[in-house]
Image (cartoon, rainbow, N blue to C red; front, top):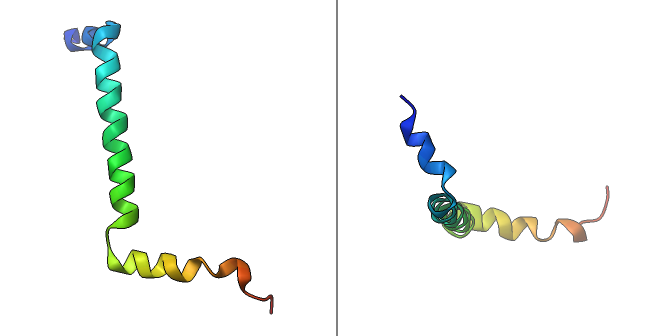
Length: 55
């Protein structure tokens, strides 16, 4: 029933799978940060938060 899980017990199979998984996550995070004009505008506003004076 779970024969496909034995594929992960072999390190020669697990390392490339992990590499592809981490690279996909990295590209997804980069795309999330740099794509979208609304997000870019919001990040531009956030960069001045440390210089705001306390009320």
